[in-house]
Length: 116
Image (cartoon, rainbow, N blue to C red; front, side):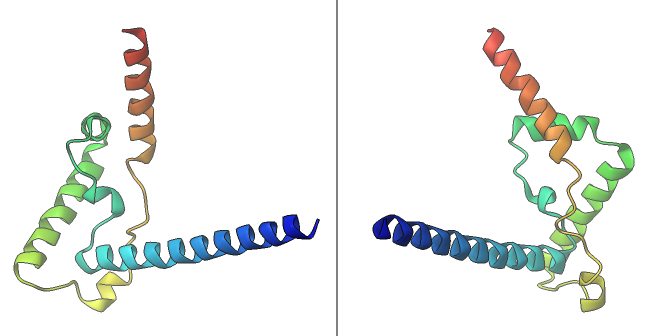
């Protein structure tokens, strides 16, 4: 039917628009994080119980790197400065280092809650 095809086309167009906006937003966030040398997972709120557990099991060198990135970002922010452009260019704000650990602890926490 013609109305079904029109609806399908509109839905596909909307999804394409959403994907485009999502890509634009992701690039914008990554650029903002790169200015300070941060990664996306560096700015997750520490009140997250899964994050707290993941940080406990994070390899020491990765934990130290995280703390250094955060301290550098705080320092730059206080000085109202950004990293030099050539250093921003080599930052990896989209490189995840906590995702797998957080997912594992979330799963364990949810299983524990179900057993209560």
